[in-house]
Amino acid sequence: TTLSEIVDSVYCNAASGVFNVNLMATSSIPGKVYTFKKLDSSANAITILPNGSDTIEATASYSLTGQYTSLTIGNNGLHWYIHNIYRP
Image 1 (cartoon, rainbow, N blue to C red):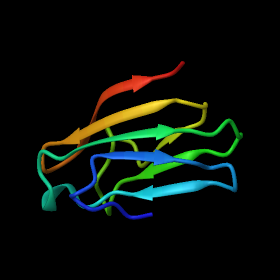
Image 2: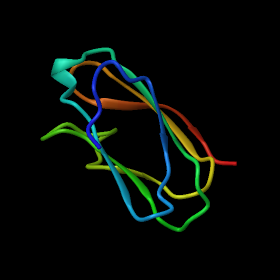
Image 3: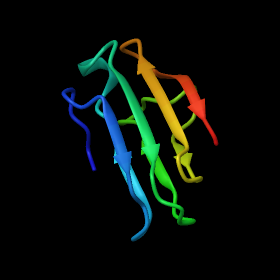
């Protein structure tokens, strides 16, 4: 799944298999904030993948593995930064 600039919250269900979310380039949406939430209890991960050479706090991806785990990220036009992580 590739996100657009219109979306703010992404509710993900990986019960059927691994679920990848592809972010847009930070340079095309500076200041954008996204929140991701894993809804299912499966062992399948939700993996958030930055575009090209973009990173999430210097890493190539970030995965949500537990049910109801959430991640909020924002960018400065160059990199994605973690604003909040919730692990119930």
